[in-house]
Length: 130
Image 1 (cartoon, rainbow, N blue to C red):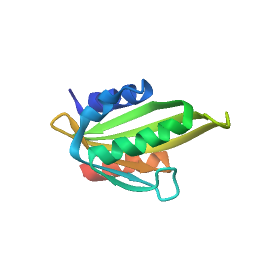
Image 2: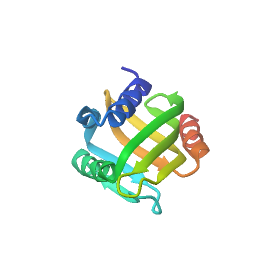
Image 3: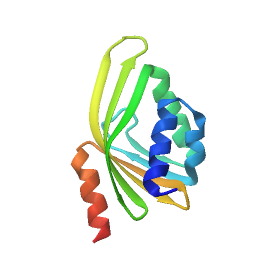
C-alpha cells in the first residue's frame, strides 16, 4: 500500500467507527493537535491516540472526516480535510476545514500533525521534499 492508501484506509475506518484504524498506527505513533482544538496538544503512542479519538467520538452522534485533496511526497501525505459532526447531547452541527500531515513508514502511520490552516499541511510536505 502507498502512504496515501494507508491514510485513506485510516479515514474510512474512523468514519465507520471501525477499530481497525488503530491497527494502522505504529506503537510509537505521535499525534499533534493545535493547542486550541478539542484534543489540543500532543498524544504519544497508539493507545493514547485511541483513547483520545474514542473520547471525541463519544461526544458526537455523527462524525465524518472527508479527505478532499491528498498530496503524497514519499512517506508523507498532506490532506485538505472537511470534518463534520453533530453533537450527541446538543444536536449542534459543526463543520471545520483543516489540514492533516501524515507520516507513514512500512505501511503504518508514525505521525499525524493537524493544522488549523489547510494550506499549511501542504506547505509542510512540500518543504520536506526540498
